[in-house]
Image (cartoon, rainbow, N blue to C red):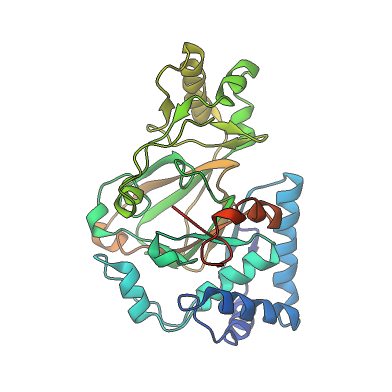
Length: 335
């Protein structure tokens, strides 16, 4: 996938210098951190090139032109540690003393007006999480493993799911080729009959919770019965896992098979995230995957680290989940 914008080294350094003024930790007090980034915007310190590219992404999303974008050569911390994969979250908190990557992701979210959210029972409720290969999940179907991932939305089984996901390449080994796939929900709709769409909009499907979610909350087993297709082209689906609920009619099973066929036929985008790339895409209005196209050094590939944020579509979408916010922390939802 071609980047929508490639920052020159001078532009990257200019934006990095601005982000250095954010002297707060997002892991100690996210609200203070977010306000500090907002102050940078309010003071007019954000370079015009970056406000312009964010405005273009916002416009593309609103018009339906595109729900997936790449920026290249983005600001990163000067020192990026390799994480201990037994407990990468604790290791990051111990080793990472600057927060340029986090400030960049927060700035991007504010400029495209997509409020961030976090999950109270995941990663200490952090708003900036790490896509890394945690040792105990090796080979499992979770984003925190070293495995490939089927097409899915993040948090499929959960009642609150992000509208957008942003991934910032912190450490992406050059000799290994891992791609993030994306299929737009509108392209899936084009391969589904009206009758199949009607069935997919009915609450007659279930999705098991992923292993990482179950480890964080043992009460989680299987989702409530849910539709697969919502809004105009939002899909709530985890391939090979989402299935019909007990008692669902044959028409629901036929529609599920039709969706699987549509996934094969629909146009897809794939992007190999490089160090310094920002890949941002719709979580609900599309499906994404992880494809290991060529791994030449498995141990090296397991050190791949993406810094990740979840975001609501807009302020109105965030307000819909206000009753799920805990302890007055904006955007933090229960598991």
